[in-house]
Length: 253
Image (cartoon, rainbow, N blue to C red):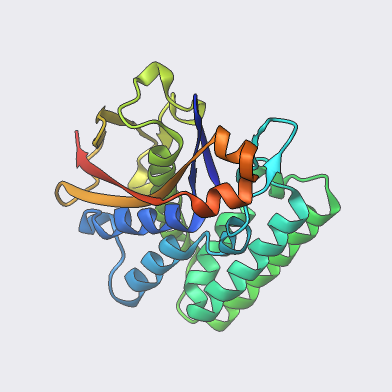
């Protein structure tokens, strides 16, 4: 779950819904950034499905009494998180092995997993390296640079979608989420640094020419009040909260 705290409560965004926005972003990238043919289909599938394992956890959000807020994807308990990661990666691989490879590389790149001291995380990391070796041995014609390009596309689209999810619409630069104050690092086509900024409450502009044209993406969220959580508990309050569709215009600066 992506959690954005507000004075009266919380904005909650399911991880899989965030990933769907990532996929919308991928569909509108300039042709020079995107692969073609079956590679394009697999890359867009991976970008859209990379957080599908979170569907199981986000059905029942958990309350973190230490922070007096719902657990988010950042601080969610490790063991159930890793279990859901595995399930989602298994499903992605079943849908398309190359998409599964890209998703596996994404999770294995997380600092808290790659350099983890916890045995469970270290075991997960080793398992994913083995998954990647197995898939690459089964697929012909793969080369490291090709896989890396498509993996970097996933990371870019993930970061742009998270920018929308973690920041209030129209937020000023000095009030942005800390992850984005220095911009977005990207390796696609040699680009190293990208700035995304809210132009107003309905539009995000990027500093480099990424998109074919201006387009509107959408994401589903819920607003859950503190009062409802106190009265009913987080699970019931979340279930009762209506789904809201947030539309966002994306454009080049």
